[in-house]
Length: 233
Ligand SMILES: Nc1nc2c(ncn2[C@@H]2O[C@H](COP(=O)(O)OP(=O)(O)OP(=O)(O)O)[C@@H](O)[C@H]2O)c(=O)[nH]1
Ligand SMILES: [Mg+2]
Image 1: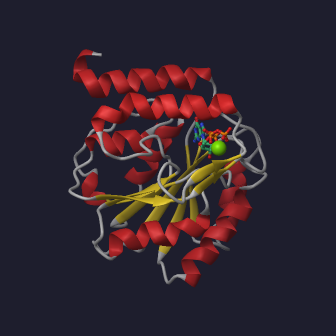
Image 2: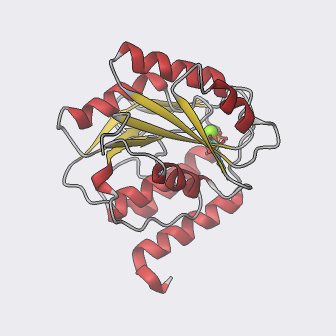
């Protein structure tokens, strides 16, 4: 089968109607300016604010389609379900709220197309990367989360949700759909020889509200336990 697109970026949404068209337009511009034959796949969980219907209405204007799910089923499972609908040889994931800079996408994609790696991760924790305007509590939580996964991989930003990969990296790999940290699943379980981190600055969402809550900390600990102890956790 000849895939219609070279790259598919999956964006999970829950109540992101305020900013989603702006992001889709920005990504479309970035694809065009960089000669990337890409599609944008929004996976919406029946958002009460109508994000799904809004994205459907944009399908003629931008290279975007919406995968609709019945209810709020979680970020990681949304990305996994989105990828399952894609045929592109390169897959990606990013958030809907502009925390992940669309202008960093070409560098991530080109790291793969130019053969530098099979998995390219947007990284806050290497030189040139960072977080803007995070309160100290969030900074500490993120650092602790990263430290807990340290023995698993040399990747510095193991909880990144902004990354691209060759689809062969996850072919036949069973990814745990729990929680928010789909990047950790791919980093810990994916089939790749080379991984590259590319710096970007995570910025706070400019519209809409956060879906991150303390339940996600528990989910992360469960996910880590399953990775460390396999089926026994
Ligand atoms: N489909 C779907 N998307 C979700 C779900 N939970 C979160 N998302 C999306 O996942 C992305 C990340 O969620 P955010 O609320 O931005 O989480 P965060 O970036 O860790 O937290 P903030 O910095 O406060 O924004 C956003 O695009 C959300 O709309 C979910 O249950 N289902
Ligand atoms: Mg966010």
